[in-house]
Amino acid sequence: MKINRFTEEQIIGILKLQEQGMKVSDIIRQYGIAEQTFYRWKSKYGGMEVSDAKRLKQLEEENRRLKQLVGEQALDIRGLKYIIEKNR
Image: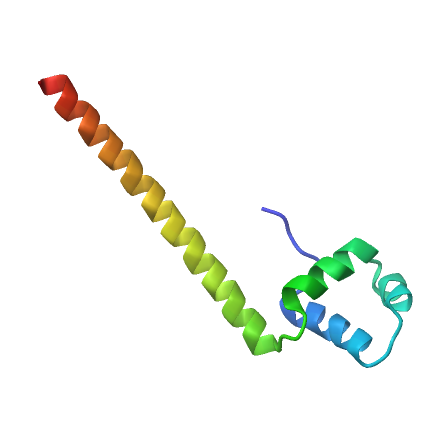
């Protein structure tokens, strides 16, 4: 898993600098990030508050766990179907 240099709170703070009128080129130079990274953050976190970002992270984690459960159940079902077909 990739380790991020910036937390969601820091990212939102960086994006707020641009909303306050600071130039994007100055922001990316100050924080040592690529312009593409800045705009990716803006598309994901733009207009959010810190509490919104925390909730988003919780929802993403819950979604990951649910997808894993569905995958495991699909494997169980496939295995059971195989056993039933083999016993016929």
